[in-house]
Length: 193
Image 1 (spheres, one colour):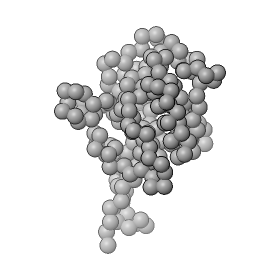
Image 2 (cartoon, rainbow, N blue to C red):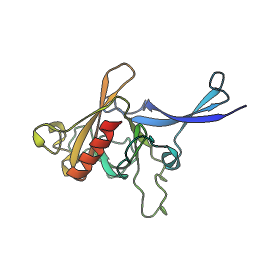
Image 3 (cartoon, rainbow, N blue to C red):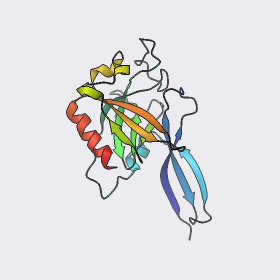
């Protein structure tokens, strides 16, 4: 009997700047049995694939999806408003964030003129893989890390997510939330995963 199984995987964006890696989610589709099935890998399709990703059944409910600022290289997300004004080589554009399973999915926020369809502009959907990750806050009770104090991150509350890579090294992803309470609730949910 033939079956179809789908699972989420991720790859590093080959065109992203090396000093700020960007993970891209993919769907691995296996047709046939687990032993001899064919595997096809396809990109996420707009926001519909995010809604299809199932969360862990033995976990508390994740925090509601919200807008966050995500540390990226200029020009990565096809967003006009995110410009590198200070010459640092990083920007913090607003992204719609959803915690599902072992990933935070980041997409272009819904536009009021798009009839409610998320990510209809064709920009990339990014992700932050959470398997084996650790979460850190800026030291000394600060809102942002010192190296981001001159960027748009200073408008919120930053946290660093240390992601385990394939070669056992750590890659750091930064997100900024609007309030201290949001940062605490997201960090608690991430630490459980």
